[in-house]
Length: 252
Image 1 (cartoon, rainbow, N blue to C red):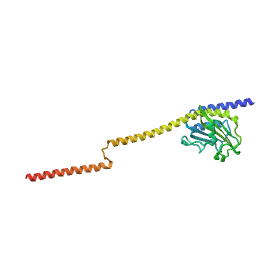
Image 2: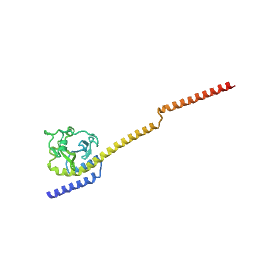
Image 3: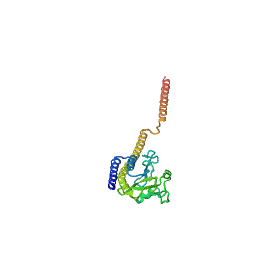
Image 4: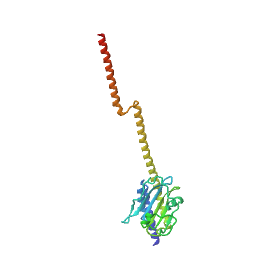
């Protein structure tokens, strides 16, 4: 009987892994990737909420998402999620549990939040009734690119026996996150390049416009200059007419 249960569990895990791989690798949006991942993970592990922190290439916080169990029991994104570039080079909190996971590439289990621990607790999660959590590093190649956290309202909800499954899940999630991070950085860079090109075009157009104008030209001066030329032509005509009249009388 136990062999049949273990076989069913392994088949469920394989099905979830295949579903995650097929879905997240086709997506390039962080939020959608994590949403699909969290809902598939929910089929294998019992948890109240899950969160994801992603680092940029300089190991600053890049983006973060939270999926929490709603009133109907399903997982829904929360308003505490942060899209890419939100933190904008904000350094990590050196005393946090997530920072320890990132720096040491090792998971952390906090079995009972009611007992004093090494790392500070999240007061917002604590107010929501969270009593235990597990934090797991996300690696891509030789780099830790983020942290996956699962929380529970039950003390001692997680143990080291969950690590093999979490490791398999992390191996499915990390490549998709790395690709999405790279695309997000490229999109931001292309947007900045587009803005710089627009500015350069505007500056060059202004310079060319100035080069075509005569010295001292201005839109308001155009009509003034025309009036001055008209007055000078009138004065010249008057002087010529006067000289012609005087010569006529003298000759007469």
